[in-house]
Image 1 (cartoon, rainbow, N blue to C red):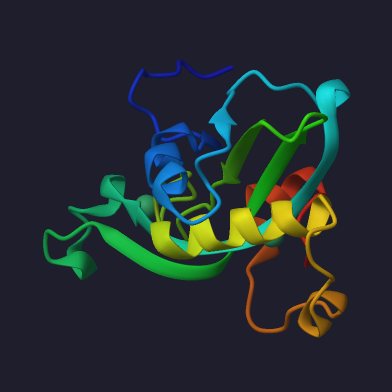
Image 2 (cartoon, helix red, strand yellow):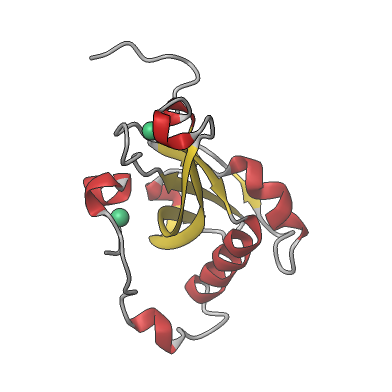
Length: 159
Ligand SMILES: [Zn+2]
Ligand SMILES: [Zn+2]
């Protein structure tokens, strides 16, 4: 195993820091974030695609990048959602994507508003407060580099 440095970007990113935004959204105040919530304590778990931007600082000094970090947007960030049996606590984990220039996993900046909407929407579906949308019955299409997506590596991505 190579040495891991403390600040190395993670393959799995806990979404705890986005809880404040979720708690302020409509229907979000009933939820608490629990980063240790286990599958056994969940009424349901599942995967959703989130959108955001990945930023690879390691590639900042490559000639092509002119001193800027290499970044790319993705609408297919494989995200695991967990909802407790009592519908009070939840957690979410983003699966990172690898940089196509250096193969390192990059830092992730989620589109927080879309994230909050999608999480709350998913929990409404899981608790029977709404029916599934037609679009949820189909797999999404579009480019997705499965070899660089940690969700795909784990075999849980929607692709
Ligand atoms: Zn890179
Ligand atoms: Zn994937």
